[in-house]
Length: 358
Image (cartoon, rainbow, N blue to C red; front, side, top):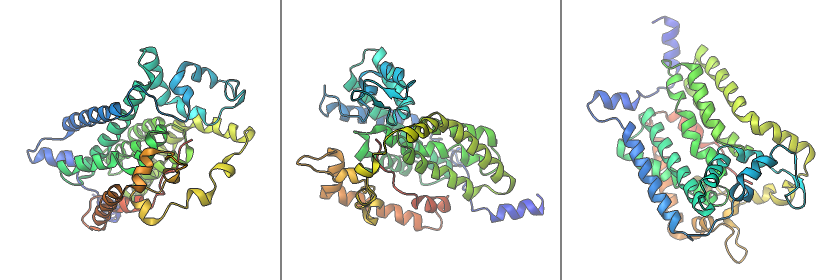
């Protein structure tokens, strides 16, 4: 090892040894297949719970055309104007639903699966994917034990930030649920052994699946892999990994970013009338943000709650207490100097809470 390489290694924040390698050397079983089995169990339980909630009735997703007529939805994307939308209107952020939500509902439509059942399958799949991603990332970073990683994955998938919006704007929960998967390929590439191009490409595929329903939500999720690269890659590897990952992100988001710019040029700007800053940030106290309950739509109650799950998260004493305890446990873990990847985790805590999808 050269003096320069040694100096760069000392300057880099310590990265833990891959947990799978460590457990394999110690004779303990690696979690690879275990994660799949646990994710399948989480999916099944989530699906059964959702199935028991108003069976036979579909819930309101922002773009009902995706649920009811996915083939017609795709046909309308080729035109800036949709003549079937309120007697003719510009497509409002519709392109963001084209991937991966659109294909899922299209498959359900072609298989003649009832819409309400397809919705439950979609929601339970998002929960299971988020759970598995967090567990795999914790394993790669060497955080916790196998049991604690499973618990952390469950808490992550059921965190109020996602629970509030997943039943009304499920695609808005996708970027956050997929964020661990976007970081996972970079854990090896930032240390040195892994290939930079392949890792960036794999992360870019995950970004592609984050959709573009809400550009702000997706950009916030991209902070996590971006900060990871800055925290642990050094020297030429930092430049190459950042460049390759940047190209991958541009390619993965161009399909919805360019149409969104076109919409912004011709469409009416309705945001000042529906989502003013004083409204969207009025509920973002430090305590609410830490327990994931700062989303302003959760507090809307016009005789009946606008989002029943969100209202339960912000008004039920037990939900508030449990969320506060979980947040306190997280802060305690971040305060530990021995926490693997602690530098990145502390930086990530400053990332803003995701907004609402529309």
